[in-house]
Length: 322
Image (cartoon, rainbow, N blue to C red; front, side, top):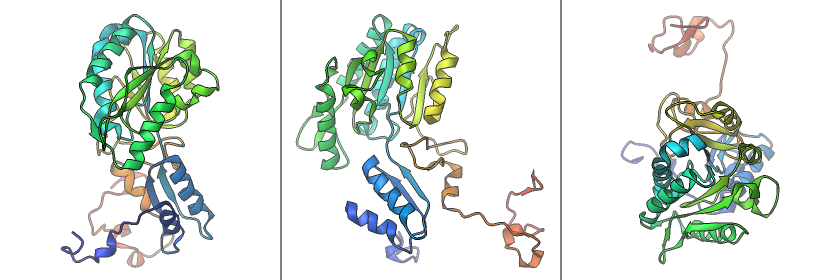
């Protein structure tokens, strides 16, 4: 494409390896960087970016659990629908969407059991898939084994190897009270990249609040609430989820990311290292450096700023669109 349009072919270049990435960030000709990957890799590059003699902006996307809270009323109203929707969302792209719902707080017993049943049916019917590379596949398999071995953790559908190159989807369940304080189950509050999610079954809203208070920053956070009638406490749950993510969803699933003016694909660390979006109309702002011209004659201004607006650009003049 570069050659066909007359650009140098090296306008797009691929390098491989951890050390190569760090050296690229340190190169004096690089003036900004964007990243999608692991916390380890992202932090190494971020630290290199800010440690340069002249630090550069680093827009990193490091990891996201994308929590979901299902209220008792929502489960009672549409358990099967929520379970099926969750299964479709967490297996999309073999679970490799950065907005995959990787942690769900759902009621224990009753309608919560119906939700798990529907999730089991959906995930069980999902075919195996290939991950981005074998390193990620190995990390996924190791992460599942580590989490599944924890006390009280069960696997209604066991995720794992499904062939030499493929993996199968699954999910784990755990009582939410195992996660309300620091302990060996903390791995369940960390992203496991691939087709797996964790269902934490809660008995009380106090357990929900305690677990949410321990979650890191995320790209998304979702509330599944009743669509008919009142759902007591839903507003409080939404308020508790809002500080945790850059995009808040109600009665939807986060894997759909529209390229639209209102889109925000970013969130509190470690979701991203800066509060900007990498998707949507304002994503370009990451790569722009603001400049103000003061007391500058019209003839010396760039065309974008001249009084006659020769380029016909939408502009704000004295705070009003012009």
